[in-house]
Image (tube, rainbow, N blue to C red; front, side, top):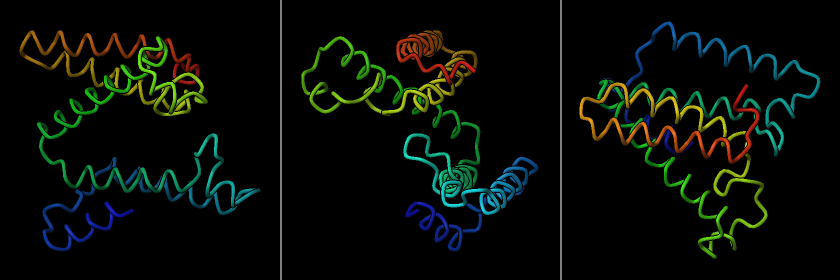
Amino acid sequence: EITFLLYIFLVLINRSYAPRISPIFLSILIYISILALASWQGLNPQLSFWGTLRRMEGLVLFLHLLALFVILVGTHKKTEEWFRLMRIAVLVSLLVGFAAVAKRLGIFYFIELFWQNVERNPIMGNSGFYGGYLVFIVLFSIFLALSEKKGLFQIFFWTAAFFNIYILLVTEARAAWL
């Protein structure tokens, strides 16, 4: 919420950061509006609004994702900025994956201390969400591997894709395979 408020101040100061209204942008706004109406008219509006602790897929999550989408579309205007964002996402996924492998192998004792009650993955806590995250990261890795011109970067992103596929298999996030 703080980031979105700062983004609104940025747009008020400099209109060039305002998101461009496109068919995709409008369709997402319509989807969130329909979701809000359905949450309000549902059998349990409170559950529809907040979601559950395990699933967390209430209207609040989608409103936060909408805010993130607006910020990203408004601040990332050039193709290279989107590539940089995908590269950072892939690098972060490797750190998370290495932490998962370290926990599984029992390499670092401090990882065991902090994450002893977590199901299968050490960072996200919910293997379903982690699996969904990894699906996007694998797609980003493959896309970056195919679009890079230098062979070393292609090898790096292909390796990242296969490593994250391995992590996806290890976490047994069945929801991600649907």
